[in-house]
Length: 175
Image (cartoon, rainbow, N blue to C red; front, side, top):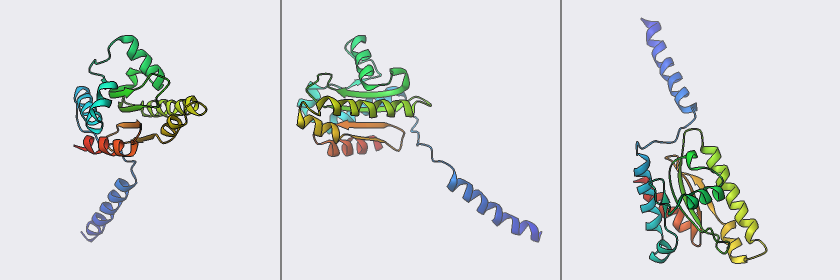
């Protein structure tokens, strides 16, 4: 009996240590891809003014690309495929006069690194494009913010005012 009383606290301590050392997994919300697409669209549009929402609409996995060619071109530029993502909201300029992209992606299982690397390469490409061409756009590309949120969403904001836009989208997606 004495042995059992001593073993219980030891077992609890061991269990707590194992839990504390286990790698943390992103929280999952149980949202469907369509619900993520809606949340991404709402968060991106809510972080921008009406003019930006008109000029740079949000394209999602819910089928909002004007054509398949537009979709293919967008993913080629971003460096990952639509199949690498369970859900996404993408607003970007394909014109070589703006360093502008807002991308929220819920990567497919095992595709986190593929998506993040693609977006990192996209940012580097934009910086290279504007380095000797448009200094103001180079500064925007150089200040791009890319991070993985608590729910596993990878968020890229490359825009004027990116800190405020990033924080606004991040806050909106917490809900």
